[in-house]
Amino acid sequence: MSEKIAVLGAGSWGSTLANVLTLNGHSVKLWARNQEQVDLLNKEHINPKYMKDFVYSSDLVATTDMKDAVEGASVILIVIPTKALRFVTEQLNKVLDELGQTSLLIHATKGLEQNTYKRPSEMIAEDIDEAHRSGIVVLSGPSHAESVSIKDMTAVTAACEDTQKAKIVQKLFSNNYFRVYTNSDVIGAEFGAALKNIIAIGAGALQGLGYHDNARAALITRGLAEIRRLGVAFGANPMTFIGLSGVGDLVVTATSKNSRNWRAGFQLGEGKKLDDVMQNMGMVIEGVYTTKAAYELSRKRQVKMPITEALYEVLYEGKDIKDAISQLMNRDLTSENE
Image (cartoon, rainbow, N blue to C red; front, side, top):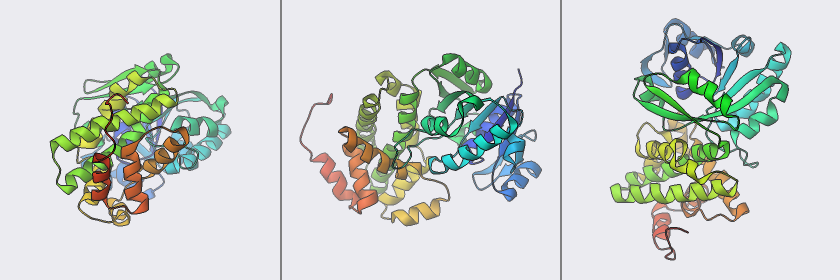
């Protein structure tokens, strides 16, 4: 059954998900703030800043008018960087209030808010009046936009405490190359989605420094252990972290050049300065901000996260990355299960 869907955020992932939904037969309007970007999407069906050489469905419509995008939409998908999420959700709430509309909200934002350490679903719940949302569903998992755009086989998770709402999202997105599973563990899905970006920076840095497969495997495995520790401390189901939004998302993000977090880490490993890396990337590197939030949160909750701590010292205190690795390898010996 075709649905009217609004997608807020026309970066690589937002525009790719909008295209998936359009190809699935839904009526989709994609909102972006940049008029030039919208014109290119509508006239030439391209989004070159984010998705070089990819041509979108001619049925996908873009607009800079949020009210136009949202009006009549039974579902609203939010794909906005964490640091800009409040700005968009506050605007969205005003639009929904003006329209007197209630929609199912989905988000594919991966990060933690600075200072408050809140997850995206918590931010959305605070900013969107309950009368305007029939539910909040998290969409996460191992899914680079570049791979989805060429219809590479992809599996992700739709997480919501109300599994019926997750099943709605499952049906909206699923097709012969994009498969959606459901999960009721929102906390685990969001912590996995956010914290894997930290480990991806570390994995990229290792390769930039010249380390090989053994080092990367060790980092990913021990990184997953500390992601799980922090998530469980906040009530997540530990089993979630061996699923798609846990180990699945971590593996794809920490091993692929399509990951901007991996690419940022690789450049740091090569000796480039963080400010230069962030300036040259042209897109938000969520892991840089998440590292700070996770480090501070782990200290507040007294959760051991040595890899996150080491990366925090590199990113925010100017520690030499080689010294950080040496310190990690020379910590007190301990059990794998701790």
